[in-house]
Image (cartoon, rainbow, N blue to C red; front, side, top):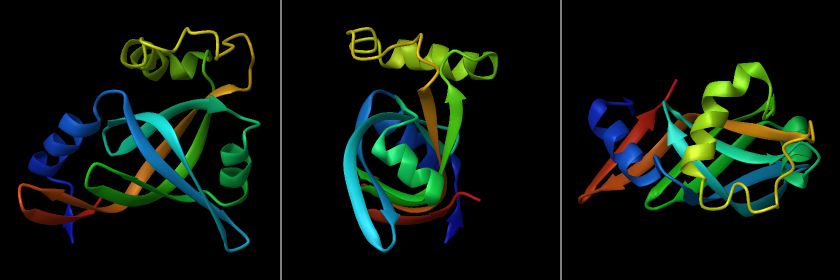
Amino acid sequence: MEKLSDKTNAVLLERFGKDSIIALATAIDNKPFVRQVDAFYENGAFYVLTHALSGKMKQIEQNPTVAISGQWFTAQGIGENLGYFGKSENLRIASKMRDIFSSWIDNGHNNFDDINTCILRIRLTEGILFSNGARYEIDFT
């Protein structure tokens, strides 16, 4: 397994540095759950706009170990609730979300006055990336 390199990071940014649909898996009491989420990749992590009271966030609160999959990439990571979308500590990432998710973020589905509207960060720990016929086993730690 190799550390994240400039080459593999560039592939991840090309594929996921924009609004991307990925599968997000959680598990509680040895029971797996999977769903598709809108996310984008930056610096070894995926970011998702969600709601703190959603099933996925309740599951992550109990067991933060998660897995993701999309576009010839699978990985494990740690799910972290960064808290309310509008708090000052989230200003940079929230601004990036507004830009990347601009086609749907203000469609009425999200309530930005609700303090439970939050940012989920999936901090990657390890993954497997396929690109141009090569397999890369990546250590993100």
